[in-house]
Length: 294
Image (cartoon, rainbow, N blue to C red):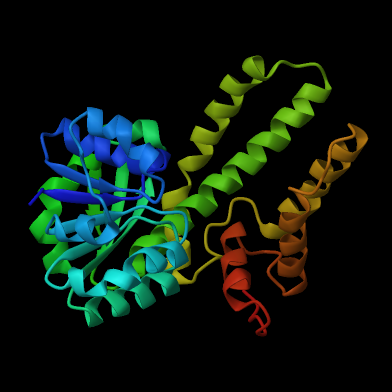
C-alpha cells in the first residue's frame, strides 16, 4: 500500500501530490484524464489504473475535484472500497454539501474529513499555506502528520461543515477587499495615477484600518453597537454618496459600491444612524425579518 492517494490532478491536485512527494510519502494518483498523471509519475507517484485501485491503495484518500457532484460521481461506484479508510475531501463547496458528503461516507464505513484550502497552488507545501479541516477527529488525528506536508493545518471540529463555512467566510472578506481595491485603482487610474504609485499608500491605509477589527469583533459578539462610537452609520452613509458621485464623474462603474450604499441606507432607515458600522451585520443576518433599532 502507498501512504496517500490523491484523486484529481488539476493545478491544485498536482500541487498537493508534489507536496506529499517532497516530504517522502509514497503517493498513488488517479485522474479521469490519465495524461495528467504522467509528469507526477516521473517524480515518483504511482499511477492507478482505476479509481477503485486508487482508493484501495492507501489508508487515506485525498480528493480535490471541481465540485462535490464530481466527487460523488467518481466515488459512488466504488463505495465498498472506502470502508475502513479516511476520505479527505479538499473540493471547494458549501457547509451543506460537506455535511451531506460526510453522511454518505460514514454510511459506507469511512472516516470523513472536509477541508478548505486557503492558498493558491504555488503556495502548497509552504509556510503560508493554510488548510482548514473539519469532520472526523479520529480521521484527522490519524493522518495529521501526512496532511502537514501541505501547509499549516487547522482543525475546526467534528461538524464537517465548519471547514467550508470558514473557507467561504474568509473568501468573502478577501473578495470584499479586492472589490474595494479595484474601485480605488480604477478611480486613481482615471486621473492618470499609475497603480504602482498608488498601491503603497493604499496598503498602508488598509493595514491601519485592519487594526480596528478586534473592536468590531467585541461589538458584534456583545451585540452592542452604540458604545464608544467614533464614526456613526448616519455620518458614513452621507459621506458614502461621494464615492458614488466621484466614480460617476470619472466614468467609473459604481456596481461594486452600490450594494454597500443600499445596506447603509437600510440601516439608517431602521434607526441605526447613531450606531457603529458593525450594526449592519444584524441587517445581513436578519434579511427579511424586522430589525430592532440599535
